[in-house]
Image (cartoon, rainbow, N blue to C red; front, side, top):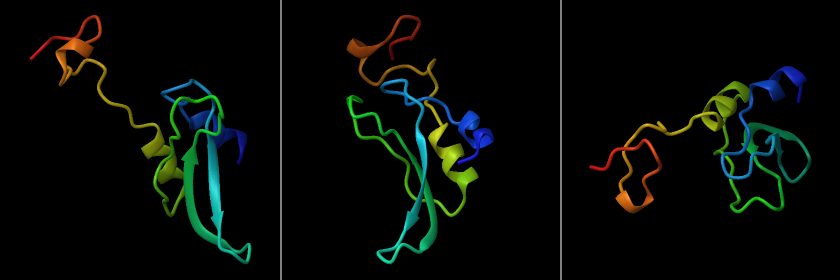
Length: 86
């Protein structure tokens, strides 16, 4: 992965580590053309990755998608400071 692509990736939302862009290969070691982004931190509390996409840019855009931090919580007991309860 080029440094330019690495710089486009947001850190893992669960542990803060830099994720990795994965290029998939079939059982013969031939690239499939599919790519995804995943956190490979063994200490991350969840195993998180995107689905497989046909382009690096599509996988990066999906990884970088985050919920609106100002959105109200569905569960008021989990609302963060600054969030309004419904």
